[in-house]
Length: 353
Image 1 (tube, helix red, strand yellow):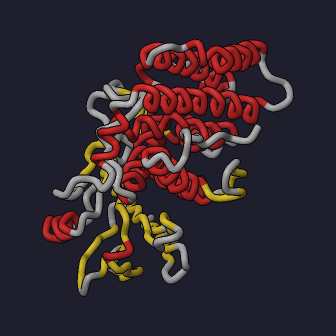
Image 2 (tube, rainbow, N blue to C red):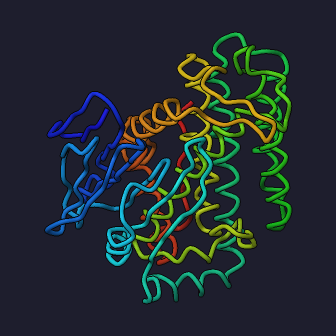
């Protein structure tokens, strides 16, 4: 399917999709996942062709980011123009591996860089914010397990639910950032083990080196990380200054902080729902000596569900019923309010349950 959200152009085969990503700014994300799709730029518009047939066009000033799945469908000149307009581009191999993220950024410092640097020196602020993030990660992990497992939880999953609750109860005892990160890593390890118990039988006990679940998790995390990064940069936050993951290596620390509260709610939920509903099955993977790879058709399906997940609405404690995309935007503003001391402490995104 070649499609745009407003229905202006549709084609029965292929996949190029641009959903609304920033509801208030009417910005869009472009997804392209089809070898016979070609992108051209003319009159300040991105034009999408499939099998040499024109499908639709999007003004460049409405594009917030692009996700290219598979072979690059455009010329270097077109790619350079997109980057010159500060539009980030994320490249995936057809098997789902994220191979490159081009973020042109800006030469100017982030709007809130100075206040971020000042607050980073406030140990009470960093510890309190980090504790809120760990609590959100443990809470959202527990809620997701409860929702996925239903009324009759396996005994091992129930034990993990109890452990996550104890970790949350004991969080005030963590006297340092190192201790908080220990709570986070302990909870994450048991949470992942519990998720594996809720997988369909055909996906259990796979060899760790040939793990399709890890492939899906990596894909979901990469898409979510890129979306978080775009949101944070759009509001003027510097990605290198964080509270919990201040020492992250080869990753933006502030993006990792926001992943703490959103990983389970968005990326993990999507993967588990696709697997439990058999919308992705073992036949959707290619098994080779080097590892396991996602079939192109399954990759397209995953991205379509990813977009639907971001648009789905959730009961939000501080803003009523809003979409997950809006949750990201709200939390970015919540963090800015804390930096500016308009808000006493950071209130993370907590799933209802």
